[in-house]
View 1 (cartoon, rainbow, N blue to C red):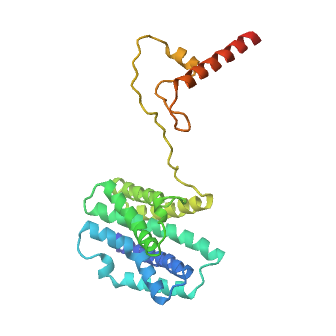
View 2: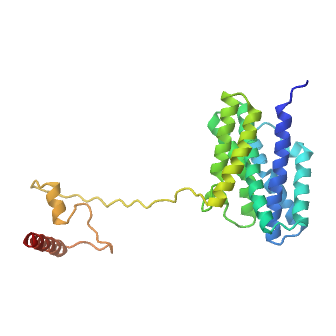
View 3: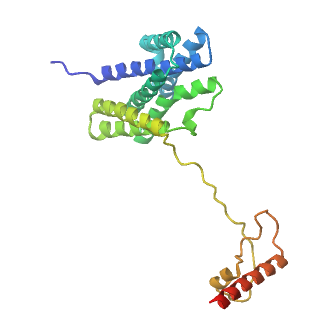
Length: 269
């Protein structure tokens, strides 16, 4: 019995991912009411853009999308399906979400696998896998004047591709089972991606870290930190909330207010 060649499996999965992502490009073309040319262009860009970027960066010759006609046939078929079938219904939208993350798992795995096979370190290999997975979608969004979803503000996207690429590294480099790594990456990206979209999982938003402006002060007396804190005045905060300079009168008024509050507490006790 002839042993199954993993490269054949990779090619089938790769071409299948072109179809799935081509459908996503066609769905966007329908949303913008493009003509036939718009459907074909967006399907080709979405389906093959990430792979072309990957192959150009790897510098191994012509990109495989330019030497294998199967990719072009897959993209054109996907554009024809998107042009013919209404993808705006609820079931179609849910299907496209699943298809999107399954295709992401395919490309995260194939991009990582090809980079590892050329001797790259696992970190750039994973990054090229992510580029393969999201590159076409980024170009597509830029063409229609949209902010790419990979930049944030939406549910997890590139993070899912990173997980798929890391799984491919583990199965290829340590377990020596790239075919199993491909299957696991597809399954994980599909499940995690759908859950992230359903539960609206997002990465943390940026925080606002406020650092007080330093001020050089000369002091000839030693006072404890607790004493300064009881006075209600902390050196290094010379501005009010309205960004107004704190005057000496304001400092004295604050201290007097603090003393009166302490006296009332003692008298009440």
